Structures are given as C-alpha cells and as structure tokens.
Length: 100
Image 1 (cartoon, helix red, strand yellow):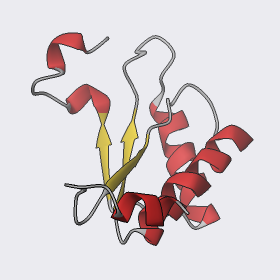
Image 2: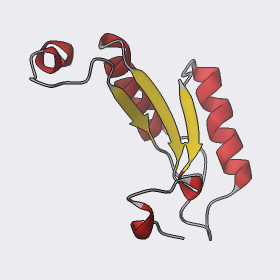
Image 3: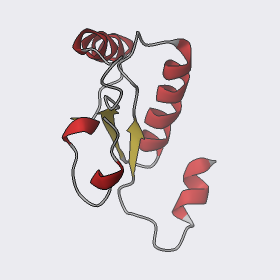
C-alpha cells in the first residue's frame, strides 16, 4: 500500500532512503523493533536504502556500550543497514541545531 502511494508521487526519488535513529541511552526495546520493521519494510518494498543514524546527541546518557548492544541486537534480529552514522559526527546545514 505504501509502495503504490509512493510510486505515484510526482518527483519521488528513484531510490528512497529511510532512517532508523535510536538513541544509545539504553538497550533496544520493542518499540525500536516495531519501528525497524516498518523502516526496513518500506525501504525494501520500494527498492530503497536504510541508514542507521545513532542519535548520540545526549552526551550525558549516551554510552558506547549501549550503541554497540543496539547494533549487535539489530544484527541478531536480521536488520542490516545499508549505511551507519553517528549524529555527533554530522555537519552541514543542520549542524547549528545540533545538541550536545
């Protein structure tokens, strides 16, 4: 259903990109998994890509250990992103609004 709507949008990208952006402030939870199913499902249905962007802007609560557990759990669940990034390493037009 989503794919049919998207394909009929004038000017829609030929290869859409979806994003999964958990915060590494704890472990992966059921809400993350449901969202990941949606993100990966839409991307695959549209022959798109999935980018995992770790939202590590909350430097007081974000931990490298949580980030690694999230990525490991995603791998175990079969969610394999096409690309990964850390929000804190992003720059560009949105960088003035970065937190951290």
